[in-house]
Image (cartoon, rainbow, N blue to C red; front, side, top):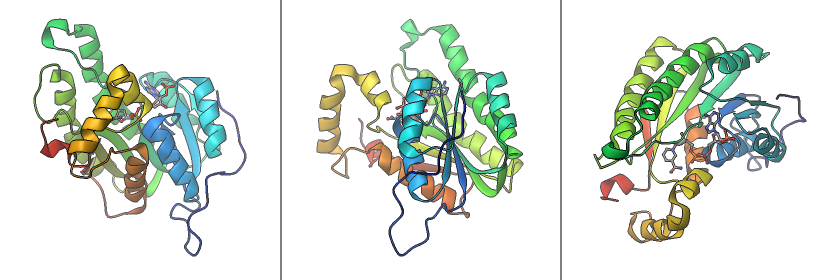
Length: 258
Ligand SMILES: NC(=O)c1ccc[n+]([C@@H]2O[C@H](COP(=O)([O-])OP(=O)(O)OC[C@H]3O[C@@H](n4cnc5c(N)ncnc54)[C@H](OP(=O)(O)O)[C@@H]3O)[C@@H](O)[C@H]2O)c1
C-alpha cells in the first residue's frame, strides 16, 4: 500500500528558530507505533517530510494521518523482495532512515524454539546489512541510518541467550557499516525499558507493576517513554559528527539489576 498524502502536519518547532529537519526526508521502518511513531511525530514537528512503513496497513494509515506522512508502505522488513521494492520505489534521495521494526525473542534454553531462534539470529543482523546496502544509494551524504538495540541483555540471564547475542553483535555491525557506507552515517540506539505498545504486549498484566518498579528504582525517578528515544533519534539525525556508535538510553537501568 502506498500513496501520496498532504504536507507535514506535525506541530511546528518552537518559534524563533529554524526547524532542525527543515526540507529533509525521514523514513521510519516500523513507524506505525511506539518509538518509530514518536520519532516520526518529532521529525515532522522539526519540518521533515516523513515516510512510514509497517506491516498492518490500517495501523499504518492511522499513524500516517496523525503525523501527516507523505507516503506509507506496508511490508514486513524481513521480506527482502518487499524491502528492495520499497527502496527502489523511493523517487528521490532521503536524508535519514530509522529502523524500529522488530521485537525481542526471549526463551529459556529448555523452551527455545530453534527455528525461531535461528530466524531471529539471522533476521536482525541481516536486516541491518540489507538495509545498509539498499539505503547506501538512497540516503544523502551526511544523513544517517539508525537501528535499535537494547541494554537489558548486556547482563546474562536465563532466557536471554538470543537477545544477548544480538545485543553484542549490533554495535559491531553498526561500526563496520559506518565505515563501509560513509559518508552516510550509521548509528545504534540501545534502549532499556521503553513504555510502548511492545512493552505492554510483552508484560500484559504485569505492566503497571513494572512501571511502578522502574519509577521507584531508576536514578531518573520515572519511566523512559518513546518521546525520550525520539528526541535522541532526531539528535542523531541532526548532529553530523555522530557515526558508528551506540547510544544508551535507559534512565540508568543497566546500573541496577532489574
Ligand atoms: N520498548 C522497549 O522497551 C524496547 C527496548 C529496547 C529495544 N526496543 C526495540 O526497539 C524497536 C521498537 O520498539 P517499540 O517498543 O517501539 O515496538 P512497537 O511498539 O511494537 O512498534 C514497532 C513498530 O514496528 C512495526 N513492525 C514490527 N515488526 C515489523 C516487521 N517485521 N516489519 C515491519 N514493521 C514491523 C510495528 O507495526 P506492525 O506490527 O503493524 O508491523 C510498529 O509500527 C524494536 O526493535 C524493539 O525490539 C524496544
